[in-house]
Amino acid sequence: MRLIKGPYLTLLGGAILAAVLLILDVRATPSQNVAQSLGTTYTASTASPSTPSAASTVVGTPTATPTPTSTETPSTQTTQTTALTPSAPSTPAMPTATSPPNAAVHDYAGRVDGGGASLAISIYEGKAIAYVCGGTFEVWFTGTAKNGHLALTGRYGATLTATYDAQGTHGRVVGSGRHWTFTAPPVKAPSGLYRAYTTYQGVKVQATWIVLPDGSQTGAADAGGDTATAAPVGPIDFRTGTAVLPNGLPVQPTRIDGAQGRS
Picture: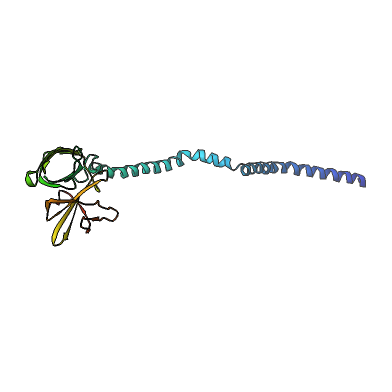
């Protein structure tokens, strides 16, 4: 056999090495493609993280969305219905707009027609008191109040007759040699009838005021309850709650109505 010389051996070795590398490259190509594919998928997943989340949200909608809706919405509606239900029975118990604050007491105050005197009337449980005052004269009345009609009497044959309702009272006064007609509206404090007592030189003095809705006042004081001795008194100072009688004595008037009557 003839020996192969050096150059040929070198060429043969290079050919064999090239063949080996080619085979290794062919076998390595599928692994690289898989790695590149996973890398592309991972990169896309990382670069667009919302895509899987959005897909997950859409896929999960039939299960996730009804759960909070069905749990929260009916619960809220049930709570509101339960909260509203107890308040319904209390509605009939509310007072109507036409109901007076105290149906047992009805107070009226105004001037007689012509302006010669003021008057105040208070009704309580079928009874009534009235006071007419012109400063230098006064007349007290007591009597009954029934079915919207007043029938009152006072000293020296004085009479007061009237009709009344929630809108006011209208009637006629005869007393102290005078005759008046009147129309008086209903009033609330501080308007109305006020009274105070004191003692002067051993004699009991009674003072009475009529306070009208416009704030004007008419009042008189008498000695021993004798209306013939009536003398005009100054107005009540509502800032201090006091008034001064003609003799200089200070008093503290209090508001009265038909429940107290006339003593």
